[in-house]
Image (cartoon, rainbow, N blue to C red; front, top):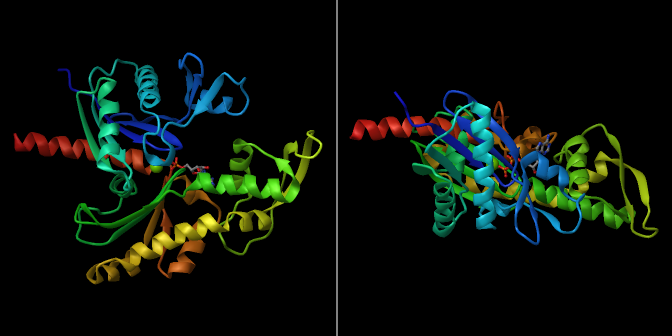
Length: 335
Ligand code: ADP
Ligand code: MG
């Protein structure tokens, strides 16, 4: 018997993950597309494209088509999805045919943006496309009891957005999202190094600095790191040593913006659910959760327990896939 393949897609601003029911996560690559600026032809996607960022001739440009969690470039997104599905077919060893697909959508997206995501996925040949709120997927993937009438609080810190939601009884009780995520930290590191050291560094370097010596606003023993860039005065390559304390200061603003959003969401929690938050705490997902000291800092600031999901970078994809089987079971029952 041929059954329809079921696929979950986490269409993140930084990373795209694809989950299939039997094999779990079968693809995890940066959401970057390298295209020929003249012909608009897609030259590479994913890791291959990300490795090209800032290193290619002018006619080859690397695009992140999902900036801010929404489709900024529709055609490129469709092209990227097509290439991704090709890769997935290779990975699983058979053609996907016309799969049923569940895609997560960012909390802050408008109905037009949702429609665009739906249509883009449909356009590459899906049989059925369903959308799920990203934060609900994150909560399911993080093993929270979303079906229970208790407050499950999820903070998903992605590349372009941070989404905070309180989920109870299978739905969102209250949610807020800001277009500030890990990318903003990278931007601020670039600005800081430029101003303080007259040194120009690229996005890859800034992201590495964040991952190696970036700390949320907590006390820590200082770490240092050697980095290279282009001296703005001489125009020549230069190496400097950066310390984690100065980097902490450089990324202060976006961190405080994230904190504000978490606070604001908790303040809007219905009182009957507030008690749960004290007991159950807040769960962090998304790559931003991996910033050193994040758990400790947030927990100090909001005075409730904070835990990081077991696999923060994969939680949304796992939840998206899992929710697909639940949905189709329900639909079969209804028939
Ligand atoms: P999205 O859902 O938007 O695709 P992800 O959840 O995949 O985003 O998270 C990507 C973000 O997480 C990027 O900004 C990346 O730099 C950041 N990130 C990944 N790993 C770490 C780490 N170890 N420390 C700090 N930030 C990290
Ligand atoms: Mg995400």
